[in-house]
Each structure stands twice: as structure tokens, then as C-alpha cells.
Image 1: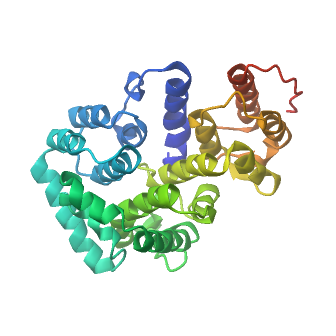
Image 2 (image 1 turned 180 degrees about the vertical axis):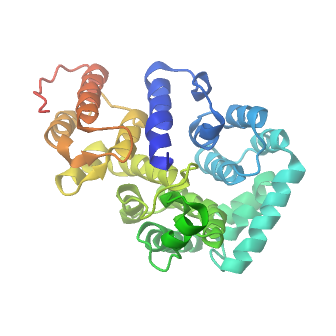
Amino acid sequence: MCGYCIESNYTIPAIESVCLGGGTMQNHNVDPLYLPNFLQEEQNLLLAVEKVKEIYAFDGYLHIVLCRLFEENILHGHYEERFDKVVSTIGYAQFFEFLEKCLLLLGKYKIGDKWERIYHQDIYQDMQRWNSFILNQSELIDEAINLLNYYYDWWIKGYNKMESDPNKRMAETGIMDPIDNTPLDEGEKFYTIFPLIYTSLIYVWKYGNGTDFIKKIAVNNPKWCPSFFGYDLWLQRKAFYLYVEKVGLLHALKLTNKIKIRFEPVYYALLKHKINKNDNDLIEVMEILNKNSNMFYSDGRFIKDDVSKIIRFMLDTINHSSGQKIKISLTD
């Protein structure tokens, strides 16, 4: 099992159930293996933190919490009480030690001079310091774009990324697991800088003008097999959804006229995106879904028949949401 399998077998079905039927992701079986994905996607951050704390210590998941705290502040405004509730549930000492450790590691990697401020606790506890940081748009956008480009080149395309020797791994462990192809130092670097990458994506979407950087993350898969935690897949899902919100559903789906796209982030965006029943593009959206269903693929549980069924279901959902009765003959 890998990050693709967990995304297809747990994350997407749980999100589907919540988006279409209501409730929360904790209504599903939150196996310890799925806790990172649950923490990434459960809409109520405090509820997610409480659930994870109930099952498991937070040592490996604090990067996710930091990403979500920043995102909440960007999208819903600075709110010190939110920070206090979440961090007190985890434990202040543990969370602040985590921030300090990450700052030290960033000094080692020399990445994100301005964005390292997300590892300073004061910006989450003091609105004036938050505003002083977050409203410095020109410099933050420039560095955010550099960070997204760096992530794209290094983690998605694999330029200058170290890889462990598969033959050596086989000789030492007897296991040929593609997840283990990232050496420990390189993995440490990935998790340390990931909050900078995630927050850069959110910031560029909120304050930037261009969409090319978001699209690059949305449609390109990581070169190596994702770990169980699936941070890179989380970023891809989020990027595709933000791309849809930025350019519109029709424009985003037109990408399938040109390239094959992994189905999970597209389905995620379709579930999350609010259908506007007065949208004049709905008929064309449905035609693209119908015509280009063969341009979707999956590295997880979805196969061609599944994709066709889900697209048929999404067309029915769009029909229902729009109040229209658009007849399209789906091709399998």
C-alpha cells in the first residue's frame, strides 16, 4: 500500500460521503494509518486535532496542523482563540518545540528566507504581527512563486533529488518498496519545507494574479511513489481545487482536451466546488466530462469503469444542482 492507495480507498470516499451526505469524516473508520489524511481533510480543524490526539501522539503530524492554521488565518482572518484551542489540545510545549526545530532545520537548507516566519509562534498569537507579515504582498508573492517552482523542479520532476540505491535496499532489507527510495535526509528536508510550499500555494491563490504555478502543481504527479502520509497528494488535490476556484470549472476541465490527468484531484475538486445553477457553462462542462472521460487515469482504486460511473454520477449531480435536464449520452 502507498499514498495513492490510501487516497483512493479512504480519503476520496470519506470526502465524497461528507460532501454529498453531510456529517464529518470522523463518522468513517479513522484507522491510525489514515490519521494524516483525516487531519488534512476534516473541515473542522479542532475536531480533527482532538480525534488524532485521542488515538495517537502528534509527533509526525504537526506539519499538517501548521499548514491548516495558516490556511484558516488566510481564508477566514486572524483568530487567536482558534490557535489557542488547537495548540492547547496538542500541548503548547510540544508545538513550540516543533516550531523551533523546524527553524533550525530551515537554516540548514537555506530555503524560504521570508516564509520562515510561518514557524514563528507570535504571528499566530498577535494580530498586528500577523498583519505586518501577511500584508507584505510583493515580497511574499515573489518568494512564494520561487518556492513553488523549487518544489516542482525538485519533488515533482526530480531534479537534484537524491535517491537511495534500490539494489542496496534489497540487499539490506529484502524489500523492494518504492516508498523507501527517498533517503532520510531528503525526507527530512521535504517535511521541513512542506509548510512553506503549502502556504505559498494558498497565498499565491489568495493574493497573486497568475495561475500557472497552481496549475503546474495540480496536474503533475510526484516523480516518486508518495508515502502513506501523502502530503504531496494533498497539495495536488488542493491545487486542483484552487485552480478550479480561480479559473472556473469549464476552463479547468478543458485541460483534459490536451493531457491525461489523474482522476482523484479532479474528482476532489468536483466534490468541493459549489455548482452554480445559473452557470451558462454547465452544458459544456458536462460535454467535456462525457467526451474526455478516457483522459482520466488513476494510480489507486479507480479503474475505467469506476471513472465512467462517477462521471455519470457527477453529471446527474450537476443536473440536479442546476435544476436543468440536460440529456447527454455517456460513452463508456
